[in-house]
Image 1 (cartoon, one colour):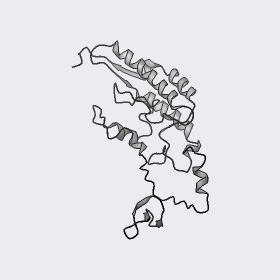
Image 2 (tube, rainbow, N blue to C red):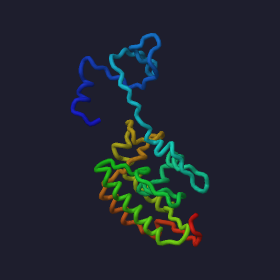
Image 3 (cartoon, helix red, strand yellow):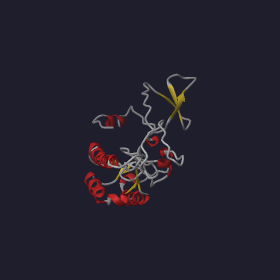
Image 4 (tube, one colour):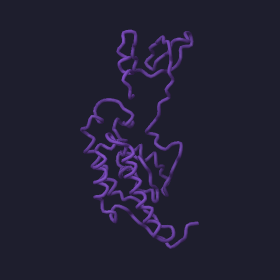
Amino acid sequence: MVSDTFYPSLLQKHVHFHPSQVKCVSASNKKALITANGETIEVDVVILATGYDYHSWIRPLTIHNASGEELVDIWQASDIRGRYFGLATSGFPNLFHLFGPASRPSQGALSTIAELQAREIIRCVKQLSTLPGQSTMSISREAEDQMARTIYQGIKDSPFAQNCGGWYKNGKGFPSTLWPFTAFRFYRLLEKFDKEKTWIVESSEESIK
């Protein structure tokens, strides 16, 4: 919440902050809410903010690979898969994405990360366009694992990994959405990877139908 007045308003004497989820409106008192912990609270105004489930990622869209694995299931279950700069996931050839796991900037501009991801994706697509038939590119598990380790080392002792809540934490309490370094380091690390070893390229003479 970016505001100069919102947080001070919570400190006023006539304002009471209840950090519990709302279960329902009371059946016996239409001016009262019942919270998830069973407390009944009379209110003057109810502001309905539905929020969001960031860790549903791209759902309701579903994407499966040749093994039948669903992309979001993999991202939710693993702290490794999808963490190659948030732009590719091993086992999903020719699938590129922006702002996958561990690529939302914890500092700096979102657009900078998006531009760096897009530039690498364009490079891959251009390379694919020079290959015959049904050629594919997929990120290697080794590159994915290496980036996952780098990200973990960067975020494990950061404020985002401490004992507090946040939209960036998954069901296990780990900040799985955030890039813990600067955008400049994103650029430097992405440039550092040997593209020939990072990407698995498989060529086929068959034409795409």
